Amino acid sequence: MDYLFSALHKNYEEMVSIRRYLHANPELSFHEVHTPAYIANYHRELGLQVREGVGGRGVVATLRGAKPGKTVALRADFDALAIQELNDLPYKSKVDGVMHACGHDGHTATLLVLAKVLKEMQEQLAGNVVFIHQFAEEITPGGAKPMIDDGCLDGVDVIFGTHLWAPMPLGDVGVRTGPIMAAADMFDITIHGKGGHGAEPHNSVDAIVIGSHFMTQLQTLVSRRVDPLKSAVVTVGHFEAINPFNVIAENVVIKGTVRTFEEIVRSLLEQEIELLLKSVCEGAHATFDYKFSRGYPPVVNHKKETQFLADAACLVPEVQNVKECAPFMIGEDFAYYLEKVPGTFFITGAKNPEWEEAYPHHHARFNFDERAMLIAAKTMGLATLKYLKHSK
Image (tube, rainbow, N blue to C red):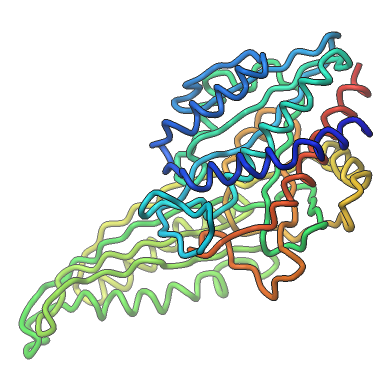
């Protein structure tokens, strides 16, 4: 433990440098080219076994200990978002309209430097460590599932992953057994009315009015159709009817997301949205198209591995609080890994104590305290060492 912590401290500046390089050179989901090449080259220079193009654009590096034992997988994602950065930083994004607005640059830098330090400890390792660098976490169908299909979890006994979390104070580590992140689904609706002159609504079927009625009633589904002891979110993020000011809209496009933790609630809302849409449209003499696309399933942490990780986090000097966090309604395709092998996904606080308020993830001014990377590396690194030691 002492060597791990000391070596990570020694390499912290390199961790920051890597993060800032990646931040300045972001790549969108399913369009990552230079980032996976950079990752693969870093691991190759460490002397690790490297597979590129895993599942499409993923990178998997394997560190084999000098002694036989179990295999631990550690995962970091590396894709960015289609957001124009508004931060005035020396390392701000150089790519117009693309930004690391969720911390994946930090996840990658953390895992690369942790790999470097664990490689230095190779002769003491009884077992193996697999470093999974995943593409396309931000956009479904995501990169986790194709990477799993391509063998990234073959031989793996346990997996750990973290998310640097800007709203959580630096020094806090959030853990939770069971569901920690929600299923993230999408619905896509087109309401077909009958266009016409704005002065003659009686000769038309106004898709905007119908869509507005549907939008209002949609908000009753969670409060009136879902068990109040269960959690769900229905959010519309897109409502479009592009017309001249004096034309009644023939079509309206509505897109949104549904977030749930339980399959029974997920299926209920999928059906109830369509039933509501049908009733509203039929009453107004309109027709509709409806598509419900299932995204990532819930992230469900395993009890034993979550407690194991929490115990390791308690030994990290910079960690002030290890606490059970509330579940998040955001989605994460780390869920697929946990469906295959035991493990846990934890939250690493990354809010600078001097900030009054942190900009949220997916914001054009998002940033995080880089010291959180060191905490994440120590926590995952120590959990890895303790797991391999106690699993011999």
